[in-house]
Image 1: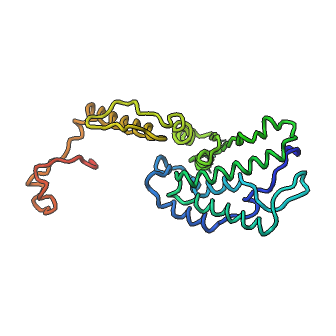
Image 2: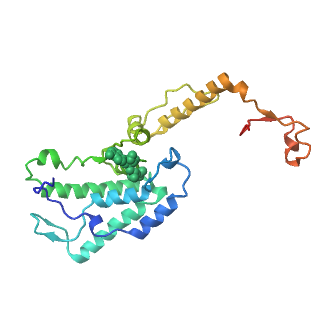
Image 3: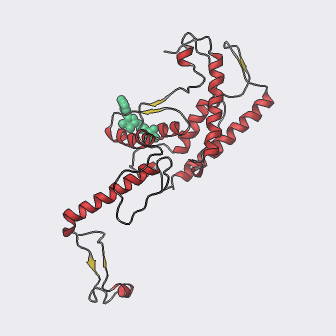
Length: 265
Ligand SMILES: C[S@@+](CC[C@H](N)C(=O)[O-])C[C@H]1O[C@@H](n2cnc3c(N)ncnc32)[C@H](O)[C@@H]1O
């Protein structure tokens, strides 16, 4: 049910969006194969991160156009509104670029714009009966995607500074979202705790999720080692013999060396 006491100005998404820039970023994103959550696990109907980021941002910032008559007076004249809209468009255009996904300057600009709009909204709702709880200018509303799937929306909400929640009836997306949204912030800036592999090095500092990433890779190496110990004898490496290299000039330099087998038939 809509709370008719709530006063909110039009959001940017209701007025205008830089669609060409968003579409171009979405198309480019399809080719990204390193560092994209889609490489963690394929999930059908996954939304491009660029679109999710743009849509959440444009739903959180107020349109600067003039509005009056809904119990509050908001915005600026046409010329000034156009100028301000251009600034918001610029934020979106920078925000949707894959290489800016973790750019602190771009994210800071986006978070500041969201906060500014939220403070305006809180001001218009200062007399709401639950203003203290619902319209705290220092506390952005939390974000919840109840059909989170591959988690594009909750991930991007978190990136934009919102407290983010994801749920889904399928346990696979629940796991994807735990791995992507719930666990990394818990170990933010933590040092790795797993056993250092032979020849491995530790860094002086671990920023953001680096310590967690290092632990995952240490654990992966440990698993590989254990698997080799327990079943490695059934998957022997192949030795390049003279016989094998007889009609293969490309193997000549490799005679005597052994290599892991990619596939057994
Ligand atoms: C289209 S997908 C969401 C894709 C997501 N936006 C993304 O970017 O990956 C819809 C999701 O809704 C979930 N779903 C469908 N019915 C549901 C229900 N009744 N309760 C919770 N989740 C549901 C499905 O399991 C599926 O993961």
